[in-house]
Length: 213
Image (cartoon, rainbow, N blue to C red; front, side):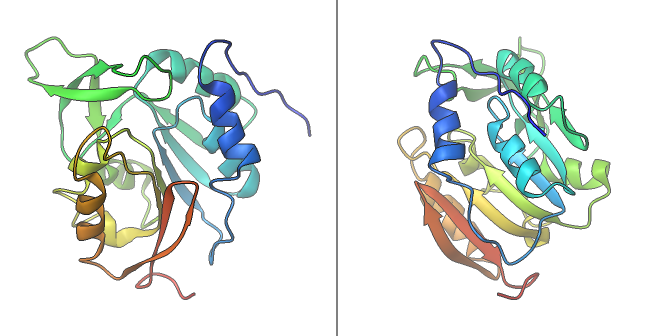
């Protein structure tokens, strides 16, 4: 079955397409067939489509903070079922944010936490929220590319969702937020994960408590 990809001119969309479908940064042989997938930092939905094509029976939650990117996710995933699109920011608690674009690019939007009574652009969603709302026992595959917010995600309130996560594919952004890599690795090391492989800057961890490899 053929379908169209929608990519915008004068954006990073083509670069992202090349990363996902030509460089194959997420195309690694996994020890399981994921049934529950979270694509955090979904951009225009290309990784979401990749996961859907590779794992057609999976349920996917795609999380993205920027409204124009959200429109593109909806266009690129319109042919598929069982994809929930969340215009929220993945974070470790209920919070409110302004969206910033310090690099003037369509694939590197960042969040800055503000108080609820201040003007805000977007609210948070947590991985515990997703586990509850989707009634999932585990997150089989968690892809994270959230431009530095991974530091806060792995700093606190990870004790419920992290041991329920089987595979993590994460890109860290120390150039944007110092100590991202250190924080992620330190927290993951509290549990029975191994760093299995890397692809083009993406670290892939397996939870040995939930899988045999």
